[in-house]
Length: 235
Image (cartoon, rainbow, N blue to C red; front, side, top):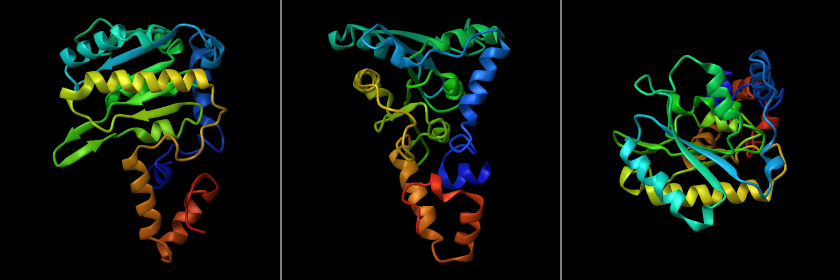
């Protein structure tokens, strides 16, 4: 799994063995719930979106973004709510069942990087995860846990390429529109390899394989990471 994370920017066995979906469904059943119905079962109906608070974006910026989504007539069929899993807010009650109930019915999941987005694996088939990114130090944009989306081929992933708090409201409106269209277009699953990576993840993955091509290390990578799941890997 560590090699898959480092080389393929994905989760080990989640494509070859469908391990993430199996884990998701087992967790729901463990807590007395049926696994979530696929997002395709709600075509043409109201869509539920949640905007997760975390330290990457202050609450005031997200509140403005929430209001902008609700005011946009093109998003009339998107019911969006702002959620906090923080210990300072009501949702961190220790009631994991309540958290699963929220995620289970979510079609569009918006979060900055970090622990706030770790529930994405529990989303329904066909749901859309929106990684809002972050700016840290000299890095103009970072998406951190994008390997989770790439490793869950039953999810779509979109990325904010302008991770600035000043721009977050119009960016969230635009990304929510893209997510809604993806849901209604009902694309076939699984999501193709590489399609759920950010531009940063795609460049990193390409660099690793080009950097070690023709070396003994490439041979080790070929053994450790199955090339049948690596789009564009050297041949």
